[in-house]
Image (cartoon, rainbow, N blue to C red; front, side, top):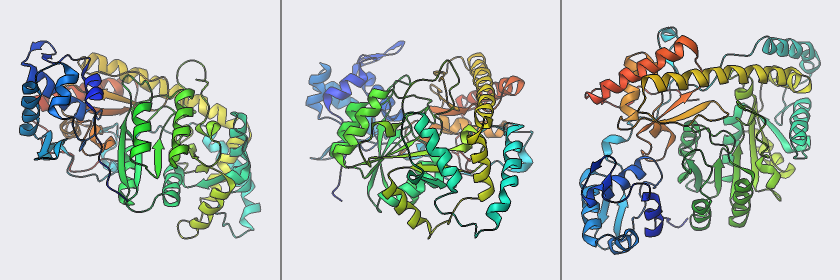
Length: 496
């Protein structure tokens, strides 16, 4: 595959810099070159300008910003001195991240059992099981088990009863679906891994939102994919379609992985028109879109948003939809699925013979029991109530204890994306762990070290625990400001 290098045009960079006029550095008056350098550095750290992207030529950017070329040259020199840019004579200037800012390890380790009760774990976006519905579902599954126990128990495409129930739910949402279009997997990660093996060869490109889900980014890295980040728009305002069209046209990725429904980590909900535009642009480019809709049922405020699944805009084989019961019901119920064309599903099922063969029969029966009756809606309502309570309590705690941090409260999903200002997210995570609160830093959700000034906060604790979490995060921020928490996240952190 030919080399592709991201670049940012002078006009586009000027638009990104517009909210902070050149030469004005917030409340302090700064030299023009320093204001420009700080603005570009912030765009890189926030992932709005890709790492290793070619910056505009000095003359072009000077014209776009209406400043002198000397100002731009001085800004580029300042960025190089700080490690945020690199240049080669005759080839231009590229954005970069200083070596010490990239977390030294991507290992994702669960919280050890002995830490339960003493550490507030904000690393996992998952709630306890909704009862009594989980128990009822398991009892219903066990009642149906004898009929399946008399068989070989090998169902690589999934139990027919569950495939039909999932297909019926898509049909009810306005996307006519046959059971033959569904393959049941071991969780959403199993579905995404199956899609990646089906569509992406070693070394081929995968376009991803920036930020994106940490575990999926690691999955793509482990399979040898080359990640191409595409920044989300500010303020939970959806996709930057100009950027997506440019990447699909110029980088020609084999796959695009997106989360249109209450995106993890930002909570962004993408509207129908952008969904339609992305599917059409991907179809023209020959790119497979994997739409991760695992959060789609977790509407926390108001009525259903009225958006349609990505597959509703597909004219044949462009979209592979991923769903899961793990977020909408319980993380311990490791049942996910892929929805695609019958032909693609058959190929996915054939390839599964060399992997995990199938998903647990009892868990599949439990999910089918929930979907066929009122159990799913009742369990989902309980899930929504609990997540809403946790979200509101955590937002209140952050406003009280960290008033300088910025975040938008999403109307659904399980996560909130918090800007920590001048405090390093990586160092905050280290200091927080020592103080008894675990939180994943922003760079885990980016490519090449972006999002250093962010953390992800999941909606998993409420009441006094949420208040204590806010207090411990504020204390951790004070430690970082005083020079602590500098080692990086060496111990690893499980992110779900």
